[in-house]
Length: 168
Ligand SMILES: CC(C)(COP(=O)(O)OP(=O)(O)OC[C@H]1O[C@@H](n2cnc3c(N)ncnc32)[C@H](O)[C@@H]1OP(=O)(O)O)[C@@H](O)C(=O)NCCC(=O)NCCS
Image (cartoon, rainbow, N blue to C red):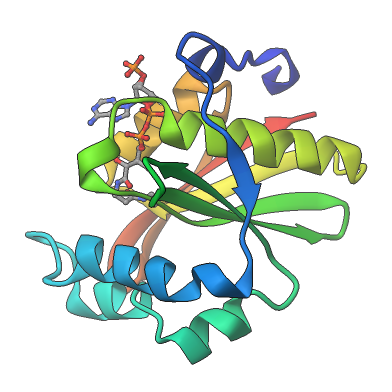
């Protein structure tokens, strides 16, 4: 089923160079998450937003066991995603794209790279979860060949959480 999903979201646009995150990128990464989640967007629980704004030290600990990829535009950080291998499956975490660079294929390029990385790491599936209220993220995952795999009610800070998966 989902293994037939295409990367059309990534391939239909000019390619973005995707790089691995290094420790030098950490200040810009923390600033990007802060820009997106502070103040918390309307309706988003403040606890959720806070959990998505790491200090440099916290981001350093997020990097343990997680491979982060980023895209730069004009030398500045435009987007980031983490990929975590666990029990033969790859989870995508902390996806974020700078508001000035949205709808330009940045998330698609990041996820395509993470999917390739997961395949090379012998993962058999890639999955992600997102608050159900983030319909944009849901549309993105479906566009990239992920299937909606489930919904947990009032799962995080009282919010419904949707799961998306793509088998490899
Ligand atoms: C969700 C998010 C990562 C998308 O990043 P992006 O770089 O703008 O996404 P892309 O440009 O690669 O979009 C690919 C496809 O996703 C869908 N999509 C993306 N943004 C959309 C929007 N605002 N409305 C509807 N569909 C959207 C579209 O199908 C789009 O393809 P199209 O532009 O050809 O129609 C970005 O909006 C974001 O950072 N949002 C806030 C943080 C967040 O929600 N993170 C995810 C938590 S899991």
